Length: 328
Image (cartoon, rainbow, N blue to C red; front, side, top):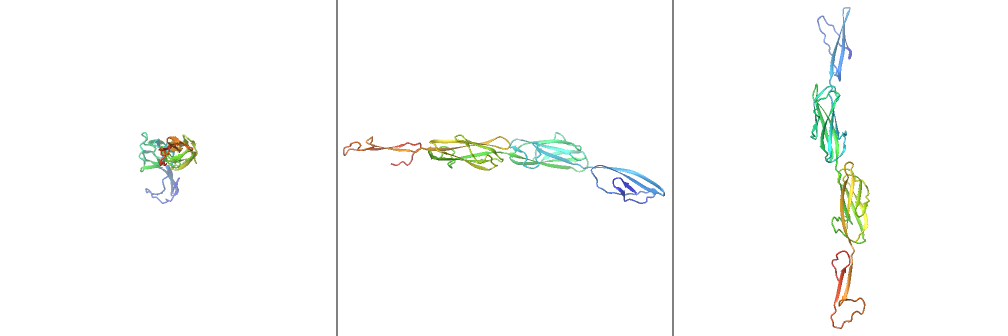
């Protein structure tokens, strides 16, 4: 009979003649790490009991490699990842750990976006040990992701590989403002003509031209002061309209507006716009002269019958704008 300290009694019983051999087999699946078992064989020869022992060993290899990819120090497995202003530096860190139980050699790290990776000459890992590699680039606009891939050769068996994805969002904030005076986009003088003391409505069309949320929006008009808007925040690619009201003053008028906003990362963004109008104070005066005299009441000068009489009409523009189509 055969007894295995790991398996128990084996189904292997027979007679063995002198000088003969009995071969038995037991099947199983290799387990991880160092394995050993001992066996005892016993039998009888007549009334004599005899026994013998033996042991056997194997090492269950379980090669494994884990890569952890970080973007600017953050584990961004899921988008959007960290917000990084477009053009700012990006550092990818690839942390490699041998989580298996055999030495790994010929370790190589690549990136799906062709990033140049420096591992400092390391290419071998003992079980439980780690080293890191790094790659560098500049942030591009919008959602970005890339995959780090590591391959290695264990002491025994085929090549193994592992991957990890990382993300960031390239922040590109932008603002635009368009100012209208009484509905007219008056980017240059003189702008619309408006009678003095008539109402004036300034409309400010604000557009978030970037790809990122803006907060803390403020509008300042150099003539009118702070401008009130429906909101101080604006989503990417969204727009809103703000209004201010006043009355026209005489002559050429212009004002310039500046808007600023704060993105989640990076510097303030701003935009400017100007608008014009001409305040018309229209007036006309007619003076009538008779033989060079202004005669506003009867009887006027005495003129002999048959003598020449000359009436002179003096038309004066007393306002601030040119008068056209003047008729008398």
